[in-house]
Each structure stands twice: as C-alpha cells, then as structure tokens.
Image 1 (cartoon, one colour):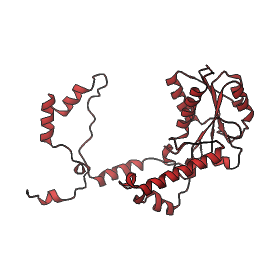
Image 2: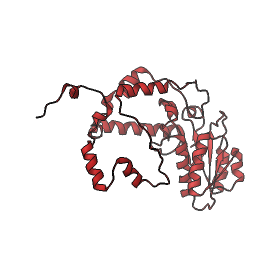
Image 3: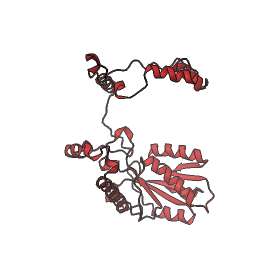
Image 4: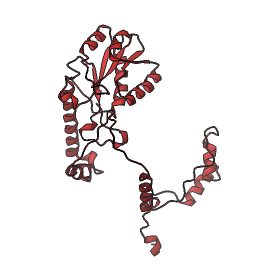
Length: 286
C-alpha cells in the first residue's frame, strides 16, 4: 500500500478531483493509438476547418468549488433585476417557506433510489393524475396530457396535431390570432417553416375569411380582453377547420371554458399555480 503525503490528503474542494478522469500517461497512450500528437492536434483532425474556431477557447486552470461559486455570484450581481409588470403569460408568485423547505428542498423526495421506490413512483403517478383532472375540469375538455415544457411548445404541438387530423382540408395555412403571446407566435413560425406551412396572423374574426386548416386564439387575449369564441369556432368547423385555444387556467375559474365553446384543442401554462418564473421556463404546460 502506497503512502500518501499530507498535501494529497487535504480536501482541496476541486471539481476535477471528483471525477475518475484519465491521467497524462493514459492520454499519451490514447493519442499515440490514434496518431495524434496532442489533444489540440486530435481536435484539428476531427473538426472540419470550415467550423473550426482558432485560437482554441482558453478555459484556464481548474479552480476550487468555492472560488467558482464566488465568481458566478459576482457575475450574477452585475444583473440589474427589475420588477416585472409585463405579464406576457408569466406570473410571479410567492412560495411559502414551509413548502419550499419540506417539498422542493427536501432531498427525501428525489433520492438516487426514487425510480426504484414503488411508494414514491405511485405518489408521483397520483400527482400527475390529479394534475390532469384539474386541467380537464378547468378547460372543459375530455382528456389532458401531463405535460409539455411551456405554452409556446404546446401551441406548436397543437398546430401539428390539427394538421394531422383535418385530412379533408388541403390548406397549408394556419391562422393565428394577433393577440396570441409573442413568444408563442415566434415558436409557431419556427415550427411552421420546418413543415412548409404558412401562418396568417390577424384579428380573431379574420379567421372566418382565411382558407386555413386550423386557428389559434388567445383567451383571455394578451391585453386582458375576453371574447366569446363559440361562434367563430362553429363556423371554422363548418369549413373543415379545427380550433386551438391558448388560455389561463386561473382565469377559467370565472370564465366560460374553451370546451364549452367547442374548442378542439386547449393549451396553456400552469406556471402561475406555484412554479417559479425561472427566467422564462421551462414550466408545466398542458
């Protein structure tokens, strides 16, 4: 058994010491096997010149965890945090400390053995089922998923779903209410471009004058306006087009549900039910 010096036994709290990485002898042997003189030479042989960036990024030497955290904290303090009044589908919330300590910060809920603990897995499944039932009750729909990343992703999935369903409608145009959240419209543009579909953005009533395979409406609208979409959805159905409604679950506690108005797909973000804004997500969409 080899002897260790006192310096080797000291806890230097370095990230690199926590990983069973290769030593220099291993690296030299591996480089010799593939015919490279150094790691930089190996990179140059593998990465095409057209995308190779030189000089290589200078990362610096490894530093202890405390120093790394201090550097990150100093960088974060350069941000100027303002109070958000914009909204745009995101709602700040207050998380009681008792929930924070006993649920979110309690490692007993998510240990390394969680996937193998039937009682934890069963509880998770029950929570997901309760979430789905809540979404069903609030939206007035017959079923709900659990869940998607954010409202914009859910809107893109809704558009693709509608296109697959309305096979009799040969249009490649999807109508988008101009009051839909801007980040949702951006994601829809990206997804539509990949499929070769066109987006027509305008006032909600214009959906009746556009030959489209489906339409997306915001309810309530981005400015808080509440419009009864039942008649518009009915006419779209007569034109072999389906409708999707992006909504706010909290608002549906008072408003007529999209399901009652005949909506085919309902989507939104459940972030305001206790999920921190997290600089924009991801959250729990439906």
